[in-house]
Picture 1 (tube, rainbow, N blue to C red):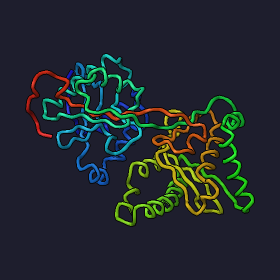
Picture 2: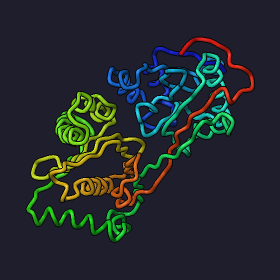
Picture 3: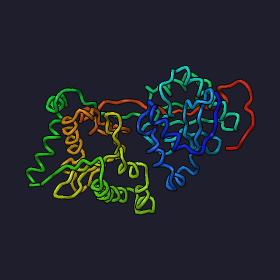
Picture 4: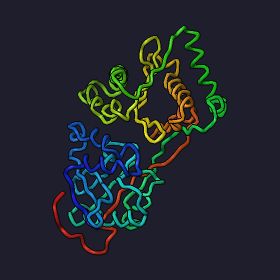
Length: 341
């Protein structure tokens, strides 16, 4: 096997999109969302892409950012909720060989630390890396808790009955309060079209207000989130924007991506003006109702964080991993010098 650095990462990613086994965060569409100035300034280094080849055939695609002698797998600095490299249906042994080749390439080019954050603990990539590293080159490993709501084949009524007594009461109370206060509510779910972009703009006004109340009115707070990967991706082909409107005003919204029968939700926020009505809980409940009207979506993946409302909705914890590896610790020989990072 050999490693080559490529300049046409998006085009190569599009070819891998036809065969890859990874999810939406590893698509060419997501890569495009983080190639702009916003992430160049945030990460202080550009994206560099590599392909591990076997007999002149592209086997594994690895997008990275490299700085100060550290190689970060793409998404680690950008805070994707799932980080991985990109490949098709290959064996674990073949993937191990590909990573051994890539790690040796990095080491020979004076890059001595490999860092990946938010990699699925059940992924083949995690298994491959761990089988190479074992303990000798592992600088740190941490668990990150995430929560997903899996929707079974039963009806919505069955789902609701399965929730805890406390959770069911919270949901009923939210609806009862809106009714008692004579509030008119509606939900909007968009997967495409100009209406999605219009709703996204309204949601961003709410989000901006929340950020300013927490962090002040600096430049990043005022405009930075308009160019982050969630805002860029939510209005594209695989993005979704959902909102609960109360009396015509956005009371809660979520933005994310549709991926393999799941809604991935990296952003969910409420309008503090309507906190009394638990609008985030109501919105998620309405989305789950809608999912039961379709066979396409069977998971509302609320991603990182263990906020109480996620468990009220019946969510279960799953783990992603943060790994930091000393590449020099894997090999007994001295690293050769090469191209500077």
